[in-house]
Image (cartoon, rainbow, N blue to C red):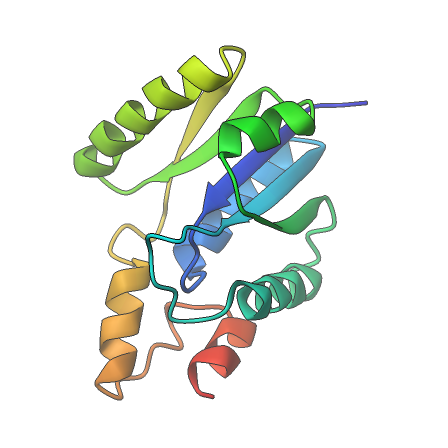
Length: 156
C-alpha cells in the first residue's frame, strides 16, 4: 500500500505555512490525509466544509495529487488507526510549538501507541491562522499569507 500520514489541524484558516507543510509531506509520503478537526469547544470563523473545499481547490491548483482533505469529529489518533497510518505530520514554527506538540503527542501515544510524529519546520515561521484572521479583520491585505482559494473565502 505505501506509506500514509495524517496532517491534522483546525486550519481556520489554512495558510501558506500549512501549505508548505503539506507540500513537504506529500513529497515523502505516498498518501497524506489533511484532517480538519471539529471541536465543539472551539469556535470556527469559517465552516469546516468551506475550508475543506478551499484546501482541495488549492491542492488541485498546486498539482498536489496524493493528498485528501477530510473533516473529522473525533480523536485524530483514532482516525490514524482507522486509516492504518502510523505517521502524524506536524508543523513547527518555534520552540513553543514544539513543547505544545510534544504534550499532544504524549496523549495521542496513549490512544494509539504505534503513532509516530514527524515534525517539519515551516518556511513561513511568522504566519499563523490567528495572525491572518486579525490582519483580515482590520482590512489588511493577507494575500501573501494564504492560498488564493482561502483568500476568496476570507473576502466573502
